[in-house]
Length: 139
Image (cartoon, rainbow, N blue to C red; front, side, top):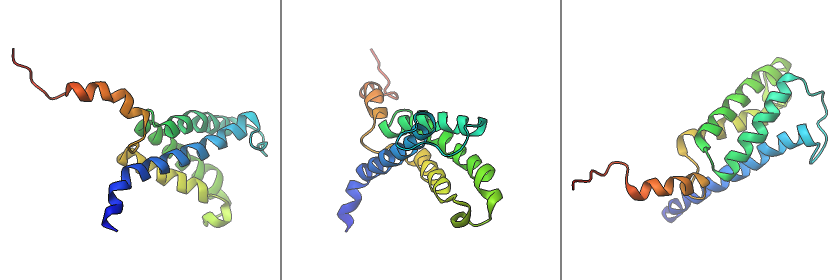
């Protein structure tokens, strides 16, 4: 079982990709009625949430600006939970807020854990990593 820890950066990437795509699907539902129409009027809180879901969901799924996107998405889900779900009931299973809480904490984890090994963040940062930001060159 100790050999499994060698796969944790890839497992983290899979968690990030799946969470990002599922989050993105909430945004596409609001704006494009795909995969299903959104069943409520698009008031300002839902519009803001939908934009965050589209943009942050895409960035998280591809692993670009992951920590910043996860920070915004986590905050969005915390606000969404307390504005939309919590007033209905204290219990998440009753107020239908389970997904909002889960997204909030998965994205909160990504802020600290980073994107995992399969991410565009690494492609962009690769050039700087080869130069070594802390190397001192004496000529």
